[in-house]
Image 1: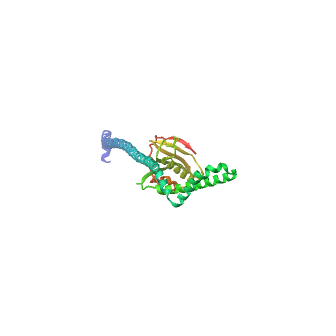
Image 2: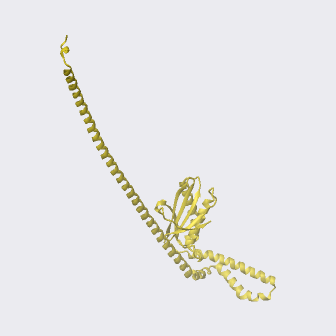
Image 3: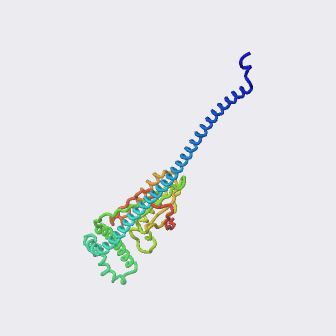
Amino acid sequence: MTSETHRSVTEVIREVSAQLECETSLGERALHCFEDELAALRQAERNILAQIHRLEQAQLHRLKASAEERAALAETSRVAIFDVLSAQNRRLVQRAHKEKTRWEETISTRITEALKEPTLQKKWSQVQEFKNVVAPTLDSVLAASKEVALAHQTSRLRDLRRELSSLMHQKALDTHSMVHLDLILTIEPVSENELGVTFVLPVSGTCLNSDAEETLESVLLYRVMEGIYVYLRQTPMKTGHIHVGAHDGLTVLELDVVTEAHIDEVTSSIKQYVSHHLMRVSDLRNAGVQTRVTVVDGNLLFAGDQQTEANDVR
């Protein structure tokens, strides 16, 4: 028999207990390691979450600050643009007043000079002769002869006025320093096939509110609208509504354009049509007024909550 046959139950229990105690100690140490590691990870998680929160707050602050900076820049740009246009409007009004005054002061002298032209002098002498010599005798002639004589005089006066008018414009043209005007154009998408078109003009927002005679301002405004309508005839819309309003004292034109053309193509076409119609305006040209269509970002003109006081124009 081996020596194990002499072991007692107490010895076996003692050995098993010692082995169990050893394994339990190892297990507890392992559990403590897990707990320590989990505690460290949980703390790291809390630190990361806190750091994420701080970064999110910093990000929100930066986004808000950036939005405020963009809004401030847009407002600065808007004010600067409208200040320039307002100054151009004042120069346009001054030029119109100067042109009217100059014309009124020189028209009598110009007519006298024009009538020194041999051809016109002869026609003027004929008109005066009819008035002073022939007209007083018409009551004594037959009605048919009187009618013929008056018709001939009317035709002679019409020709004389036409030639004088043409010659007046040639003679009365003065050398001006050019007045340059910016016509601000912005086009923004409204929907898939719809674009919002806005013009801001260096024209008083009240230039159409009075019954006064036609001015350089109203001429400019009507020719811009004419160019827009001619462009609209090339689109599926064929026509449209132009909303004429005022913003910061200046005239604003707004309309929606339905088209499948690219926004760049629409911008180029409207610019071309408006520029073409303005080039044909002799009143502006004679007054030394030169216009240019300037395309700008819509965000530089109006904030989201800004509106224009508008009237509908077909």
